[in-house]
Image (cartoon, rainbow, N blue to C red; front, side, top):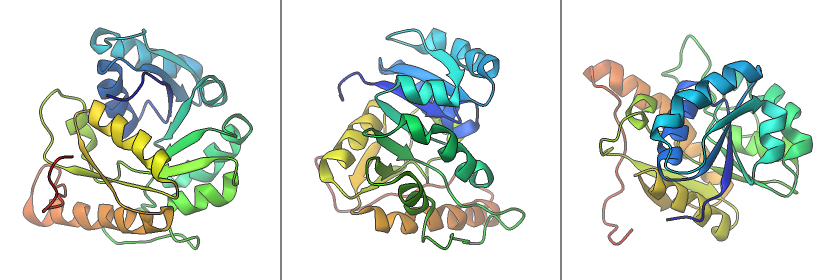
Amino acid sequence: MAGKARIAIIGGTGALGTGLAWRLAGAGHAILIGSRTAHKAQAAADALAANASGPRPCGAGNAEAAKSADIVFVTVPWASHAAILEEIAPHVAGKLLVDATVPLVPPRVARVQLPPEGSAALAAQQRLGASVRVVSAFHNVAAHKLKTSAAIDCDVLVFGDEAKDRQVVLDLARDAGLRAIHAGPLANSVAAEALTSVLIGINRAYKVDGAGIRITGITGT
């Protein structure tokens, strides 16, 4: 299990953020829910309290949550990604930032539509600068499945330019009950972000409840 970090989840009132917060609070991590409105963040944090095995989760505005954390997760819609990064930028220098954003562009969310930078994670790294260590992960896990204690039949691909930073996120994913895989540098994040749209299309075509991915041939993870 990873060391007990103080983790801010920006976008923590949304589906993916809430699910990750639920799992990580249950593993004993100190969770800060970040939202544009502090009272909404606190309400979401209060809802996690019954599952927390460590410190009681807290809520705050995005900037305050990012400022107070050791590790910052970004789980926001693509439409608000740039604005949220600008808001928290002064508070994430020197920190590890885990970006789970997928560049979905409604109404055709089942069509891959990547940004000019190549991926949302690469856009985040460019916007935030070299002082922030951006890692990309958690794109292909159905958010609603994270809000239960059931096993999830899906791997997490983790991308980052430094293996030690990827390892931190692998350990957090395992704390959350998921198998995680080193998937190479941040430039490779394009693959998982694009795959999210593919999985949305698969869900629709086959009428399944959250298709995921498995990497075969790997043991001992």
